[in-house]
Amino acid sequence: MSAWAKANGIKDEILFMTDTDTQFSKSIGWTRGDRTGRYAMVIDHGKITYAEVETGGEHKSLDVITLFHKASSPASVRAQTLLKQISAHASETATEDQATDHTPQNKQQRTDFELNVTEDPPTSDQLRTILQYIGSGPGKAGQVVEGAADEADALRKLKEDPNRFRRPVIVDWNNGRAGESLRRCGSIMRKLTTKTVFGDKESEIIQMINQLPKEADS
Image (spheres, rainbow, N blue to C red):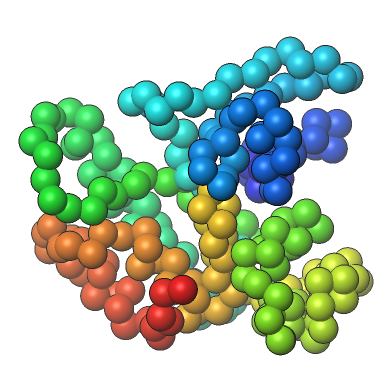
């Protein structure tokens, strides 16, 4: 949520918050399995002024993919180029699907998404979420923030020196995934594409992704 706020230039007078542990969502019955449901709620000085939940109709909000980018990093530039191509092709496919009728086909559905590229470091809340997505194994925090021993150390070091944040990092906020290296970025990009080739344009994109270092799906 904080990524959306930053992308739209929202200042601190409006707080964008999510329900990371789904406790609130469960209390109001707005969940999807073990995840929070797709809903929005506006609370103005303690009063709910708007609340709406998606009920599974035709209209679906786009998943948000953020690339924390560094223009001087060849790996980051490569990730940005591939993400833009995947996003453009997914958008074209979604538009074509809306314009024509299709009989059910045995193929994995492509999902259009909103791509947010930023050279700013993550906020403290974003960093906590990224570390949660990546996991708490040995050395994980140090892969995201240079020299960090754990989450608390990563938050402290990022505040002291934002340049310690290692880029590129790709975050799939809606599906709880993050990639803190070109290898893991490649893993996320593979998930953003279908496994079936539908044409020369997509074939070229998949070939470029497959040239990235691979990581086994977890």
